[in-house]
Structure formats: structure tokens, C-alpha cells
Image (cartoon, rainbow, N blue to C red):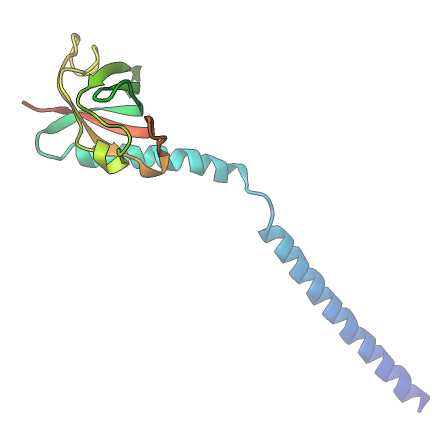
Length: 168
């Protein structure tokens, strides 16, 4: 009888140990899944929008009447009076700085959305050295990345914008 009790005790202890190991394994897996983001996750957050802009610009180049090279950067538009706003582009064309500023008139920043900016015409605003040495060609905003767009009422900031040349 004593033998049976010892054997039953041993089996119960082994079962208890097995349950403990399974619980520990489950906790290890849970700890690994809730580990902080790896560095490549942060990079994908930065690179993914840039690649999206590049792909969108390449797709837009096939549109009738528009051509590259693409100007890629950010736009800020500030309302200066009841009818006029200042359009400020800070970006690049062919890897070179391609900044310009122009007045939009009439223009109301208050109700502007990312979709409203797409198709915006910018006559004679191409920076020098992008398409031609002198610049001055007509441009059109073709893509505004919505998650990077903010309207504060009297100003608009678009973090990722693609602008193309208008083909005459």
C-alpha cells in the first residue's frame, strides 16, 4: 500500500512539473511577442512613406500632360490676407535642393484638404536646374500623402508632396 502511495505521489508531482513547464513556456512566448519594436520596424516607418511617394510619383508620370523629373518634398501654405496665401515648397529634384515660394491668389487655406491640393497649378514656378537650367516651367501638385497633412486653419502643412511638370 505504501508503494502505491509513493507511485501516485511521484506521478502527481511529474504532472505538476509538466504543467509548470508549459506555463513557463507560454510566458516566455508572450514575453517575446510583447518585446519592444526592433530597429528595422522604426526604419520601415520612415522608409515606407518615402517609397509610397516614389511609387506614386512614378505612377503619376504616366498621366497625360504631366512629366518628370518629380519634385518631392514638403509644402507649407500660409494665409497672408483674406484672398492670398503663400505657398512654400521645400524639397528636392534629382537629388538637388529645389525650393521655391509663390503667392496663391485667390486662395483660402481654412477649408483646404489634401485632396484639394492635388491638381493645384503652379504656373512658372519650376526651380532652376531641375528640368532646365533656367527653370520657370509650369508645375502641378499630383500627390499629397494624407497622413502627413495638417490644416491649422490659417496654415497648411503637407509633409510629403509630389509635384510634376506640365507638358505644353
